[in-house]
Image 1 (spheres, rainbow, N blue to C red):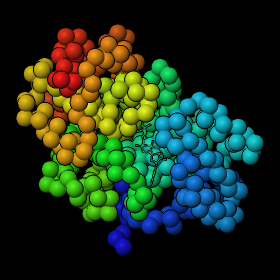
Image 2 (cartoon, rainbow, N blue to C red):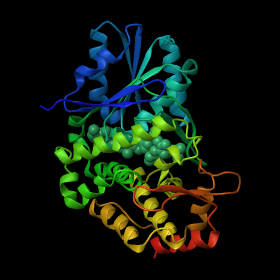
Image 3 (cartoon, helix red, strand yellow):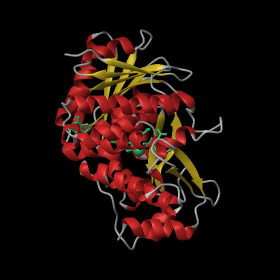
Length: 364
Ligand SMILES: NC(=O)c1ccc[n+]([C@@H]2O[C@H](COP(=O)([O-])OP(=O)(O)OC[C@H]3O[C@@H](n4cnc5c(N)ncnc54)[C@H](O)[C@@H]3O)[C@@H](O)[C@H]2O)c1
Ligand SMILES: O=C(O)C(=O)C[C@@H](O)[C@H](O)[C@H](O)COP(=O)(O)O
Ligand SMILES: [Zn+2]
């Protein structure tokens, strides 16, 4: 078995993202001695893993509780958050205790949100179990729940104290979920690391195999992109005048609007895949990139079985959804677009005609 890779996220409170196979021994050392209690928050489908983690920490002398939440996006609600807060209250969870978030991005977003809000902030460790969770959601401290009005509209920046990406957990992940996670990896390729695109183009089927070396390589590359970006602009202020963390939102303006339109039943990565093709068409129509780069978006994403277009006739609803995007300022929509591969920039206030024309390109 190869050695784990440790990728440091060098923020003010730095932590490691450990990537490898068979990493169950990593967790106990990450939970500080001072934690009397741990709460393992896991989705219903990961009950076996959640219980194994709870039992292990329990056998090492912690008062260990499991909190089961619904699978997928249904976990990211105020009702589920209130249920978790209630369990923490009843178990007497204090500021020295630790939340462990186990599961896909929805579970780790919710667990991080609980850790951020309980007693105004307790420590948490994340154990992502999807490609998307490993490469994106568990890294960087964005925590959130959804509301009927939009995606991730309530949340906080709250960083984990450690992240364990055990690739052996991906063995049970359905192929569609692998595809969805790879959309975020491809995003990292377009905004920062073109080697990721080269790897997908060379052999998309190998990339879709969760046991392959190339999957591990591009997961690590994606995490490195994310770690670098969040270390430079944790709270997405863009204070140094660069695009900063907003670059990681490539494809998300339309993507989140699609998820909202679909009442959060659409895979996040699939929505972001469509959103990236839309952003590429927008950039082409604005004269920023050429048709070849738009074609590269479609080809790379389609080779992984990801969607590259969406339905006609729903533009008004999507536009209304996009207005609540966190990058908006007042009435102005702001998009992440490319000026070339690995050259993400903000395109503020595109003309509405241009926005509509770009949508026509993906909904024909
Ligand atoms: N915080 C961030 O920076 C960030 C980044 C990207 C995405 N996200 C969020 O992440 C969420 C999407 O995450 P996701 O794609 O991981 O989906 P998900 O969390 O909805 O998980 C998908 C499904 O797979 C199941 N599952 C998880 N691990 C499994 C495994 N190993 N084997 C079998 N089934 C498993 C889950 O229970 C769920 O039913 C969205 O809410 C998105 O907004 C957050
Ligand atoms: O970490 C970030 O920053 C991202 O934008 C990563 C995205 O992939 C992720 O989906 C994030 O949750 C979106 O953030 P939001 O601020 O648009 O809710
Ligand atoms: Zn995302």
